[in-house]
Image 1 (tube, rainbow over the protein chains, first blue to last red):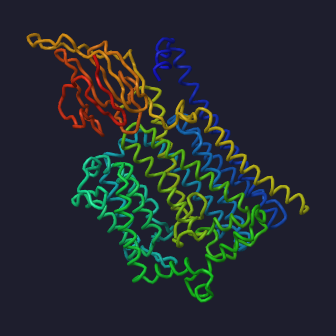
Image 2: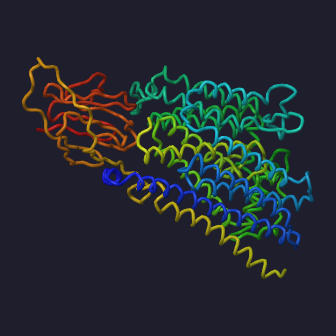
Image 3: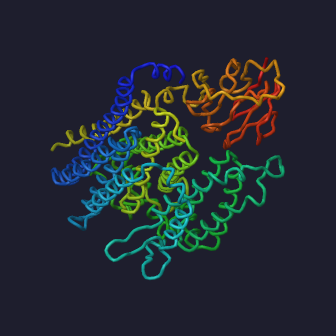
Length: 464
Length: 165
């Protein structure tokens, strides 16, 4: 580090300016190239869907998808002005995932005979446009992420309010047994999706100040240093909230997501793995008790452990969906049936919860692994932003936001592939669902903002 | 459109999907995060010495007796750059992640401006600059400016150093 710094000092100011302008342009050019590449793949996927399912090309939907690509490019242009040093890989990866999702949803529309405004793909495209525009707004307005730390208790209030919103009579709606939705007449959305961002902001802001007391150690017992009893307060409160989500909103996935997020941030903030033991024990006990008393949790466990039992397969809320998804994967095989050639619409909710099974059927193991690699790359970028972060809040926030996506991918794909019990969460960027798209695109915008700060700090000296 | 063409196109699609993945991996490999992304160097904490970082000279109180023989070298005894010796020419050395620090330690436990070593009446004194993970002299966390005797371990993050004549 010292050698390049001293050489910088000896060069003229013009040379320095050129150097600073050149590197970011290189990053942004790479981003533009990859976004165009992602747009080409999306168009290719849409073309294959129509060729495979109906035998002729549908030019209009490809045109619409290119229109969405134009909005993503607008975000790219915005970054050239407000976040020139941002990570160049996140946006292309997300563009491709979102595009593949639209292609698959369009394919299911064809199978279900939905057209026009009835079509899920049309709605998904409108939501993608809204989500991208919101992301542009976030990256343009939030110029300094440290301002977000100041409002940590506002985030807490927002997060909790969004969590309990679906429980409010008249506007809360129960869909598929889980009370996670809010219906506002024209649109219905899942406030919990936005709530996860508010909670990540709050946890990060809170743990920056509380980490010192939380890293204190207490008595040694059974060869492990346990935390002091008085420090167990925060974890207990979050555990209670998670259990309330499990009981009243009847949603195991969301409950696990919030609690997992808190545990990971606690571990990252204090560096003490004992929190995993404490938290895992608390959540495990809670889930075990819940599986005895809450029929829906019990049903999920039974459907997971004994999926191929005919009684469970045929019972309402049984393993029919899960098993059909697995059959989908099986019929896809290694290279898949090809887009438009399988029968993914047999699985209920194939366009949202089970989109991975649909993609697995038509793209095969090879395609699913490519998608998993895309997620892996996205998550590795996010973690890297966290590791390189210059201030503690930024580091915790980057890790928290990335981990929300990572955990969600694991919970959904793990559920569909029968690694863990099925829980109702959406696959980030792929699944049909407006609130999920908007929330995940906001996460993208925040990560891009954080990565821009990381690089600026290293190149432009210390911004404390 | 014939079945064969469609099959080739489908195969081509999977191929192009993987080409995208590899394009991203390739871009990762080349320098996106500066020298951070190079393999092997990624997770290794980085320590550098910045002789250019000269702080304003500290003037000791006139009437105090001055130790004639202060420590002249700082030796890193544990951490990424174990064995590195740094001559203590100036009468102040700042330690932290910041590129402006005299001794730049880049690891996960070091704060931007972590601590300051200062020559005070001929004795080296370490002052913690309200760092997150603290500065330890002889395993005791430092809260006030503390004198650092010779051969006493001082730890900052995962790095331990001591002063030698």
